[in-house]
Length: 273
Image 1: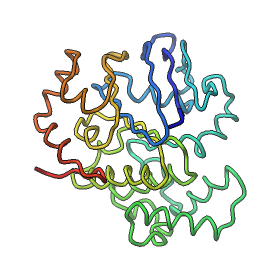
Image 2: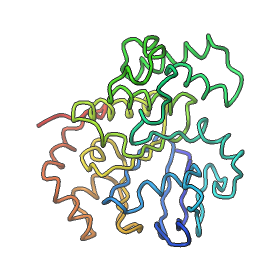
Image 3: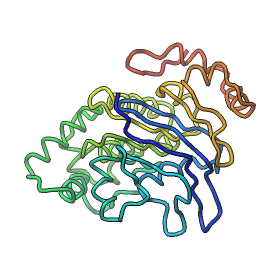
Image 4: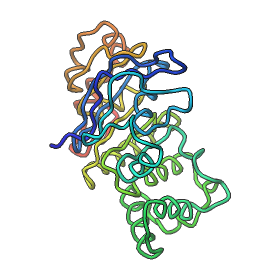
């Protein structure tokens, strides 16, 4: 599988103070990487840096982030705009907050697509409806004609996934995509993200504090503590036989994790056991 994204000894600072230190990993086509750790460990900062979303006070101060061999921190805002969306997509923790409440979902989807090239309304609508139905909406056309406030929180999050996938990015960056959802909707969102990999070969970086979600989805897991990487490896190995004391502490808080991992089906569904 081809390498898509590489972090090389990355340090990220806010106002000159490091928040992430010396983090390295690679992401390949179709791979899912889970990044876990306590609040404040640098998880979200790590993925936002790839898309240039650190804000005016944040910057990559050492190392490099490479997408298909191209250094992302050195790109201009215009160059990043051309990559963000068609190449790198983002699912935010509260997708509903990123939608304008007084415009339909469809109008906002179309604006996003049109910003990256000319597209006919008819072709766009057919693609958007197909995508919405692929990730579990029975009537994609109705969703396009809906306003965000007409959708439940879980539906808004799923629409957020569709918005991120609209331009078929190679890499999907998911920032705590299930944290605000109940257990049933979490399960739906996990299954839909796994379906994206199956349907489109999408590589995913999943930032979460939910170890169970990582166990159900990820091929590899990176454990962060105080901005530094303390453990990295295949998910089953890290979860069942962690080497770092901090990782052991995280895993001990999830007593049913091993059973949950064993109950994972080929489609990645989570079964209650």
